[in-house]
Length: 300
Image: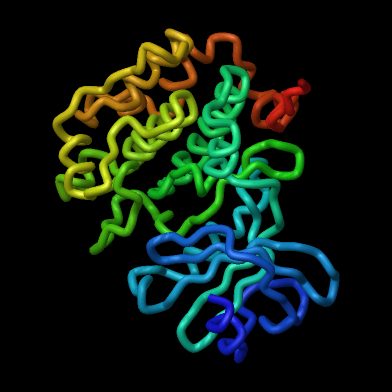
């Protein structure tokens, strides 16, 4: 990765306020690697500030509409979407540069093993808000995973990685997503729609509550088989809010037309009993105090 980054320096700035070059950023460490992209931490040598950079091979994203992609990534006025700062193009790659963040939820889950009820509901509330706003603009995300949800410097969520994000009713020719997050309708070669985002939201909340996804195997085909044919189970040894269990069972409904949100969108999810005490305006305005997310050391 570092060699590719260093050699691939003849760049064109497609988006950004200042006239910088790709070589003005130093690679510090690889944060994660997806099926078509790599996320790295970089240092701006001009301002000495840290940023996150997503590198996407042009060969792997021939279906990507760059103008749409930059527009969506630059949806910077939303409180829970990470803004795009710069976009560079080289001969064989696109580079998207965004502000730094504390961590992603995957790393936080690895640290905490599972999220407590306050942490989980806080993140669920902000996720519902951002999905509602995207869907109201006829946009689906398409790749909701723990790795694609960051905690910003204030511990609010910052949704990122819009490599799959697209207008609804537009098909993709190839699926690149993470197997255990795949909605049943996608496995069955049906189009990905707004209600498919709700399935992935359910997988994320389940994983945060129980420490692992509900349907998973080392073999991708077996994972798909479990998603299509196995019943949703809740481990009895882990205590979880009954209303959250009910919400999860409705989000992870294999039949899309019976899935919560299919009829009325996000408003149907917001009206669920799990969110009965939620002030949605306060959520959108980032007025809710984030819970403690740092692991406390035990003193012996």
